[in-house]
Amino acid sequence: MADGVYKVAVASSDGIVVNQHFGRADTFHIYELDESGSCRLLESRTVTPVCNGGNHDDRQLRDNIDKLKDCKYVLVSRIGAGAATVMEQSGIIPMELPDMIDEAIRKVITYDQIQNLF
Image 1 (cartoon, rainbow, N blue to C red):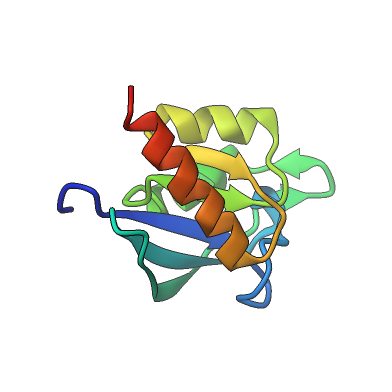
Image 2: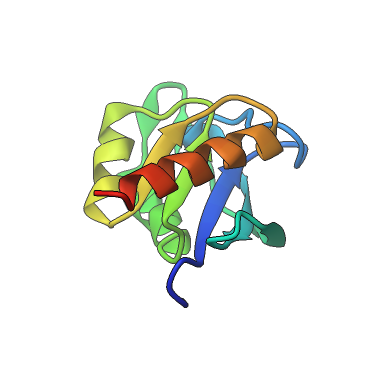
């Protein structure tokens, strides 16, 4: 990945709103962002939901995170502490941003720009 270019995975059932809990999501929309703030949809990836009535499949959780390992950020409406920890250990930053996708991505761009100041 070129400097200043990174991917963001968005948990969304409709491609419009960040509206899926990480453990219940079956689709992640992958966007590419660059330093100028431009954003484009690259693809949608299907995963197997890991949350089943409060029970979680740890192997499937890791498999799903592996499918997103080329993303710098994962945007969800909610994520449990355990899943967030595993994601962070894989080098991915989870963010709870239930909002319109374009607004959530603007927030990520701003966050990323601020992080790069330090």
